[in-house]
Length: 177
Image (tube, rainbow, N blue to C red; front, side, top):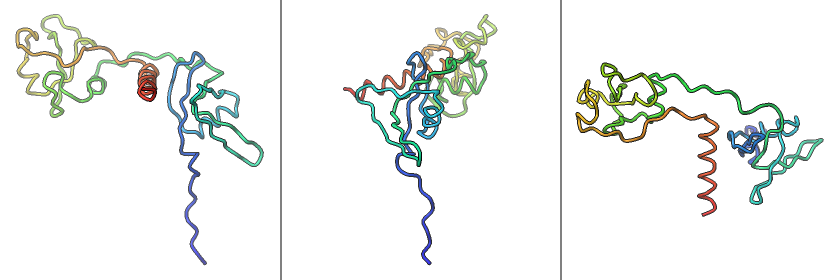
């Protein structure tokens, strides 16, 4: 008897779908199986932006047209989101695990741009990732006293849905160019 190949998902079930809020804010990219559940449960509707792809999904009882873009129709997807606390993990994530003075990715610490001894606060616009060498060089001085310059403008992390929306719309712009 010949060995049966393991079950493989059809190609269509490996697709992903962009989910929009009621207000058409792109929230996330989900797998098509989750999108089917939302559509069948009546919690979402298909969107058609003209160039939108449609996939046909069949079951014994239902033939469903699944768009690559769906919009939630229930609930409040604009959940409350708090700015994360200023801590090592979150600062390193925001700064892409890179020293904000020299660009190194090794031996990272946190540095207060305006030292706490000089009135600097432990806030998103004053704490950066810095390698041990730059942190030691800067020490307890202000940037203009050391001649050091920040590589990026400091800011608090943004809501994940807003970050996804920015990424989504910039990708859409690239596709149309």
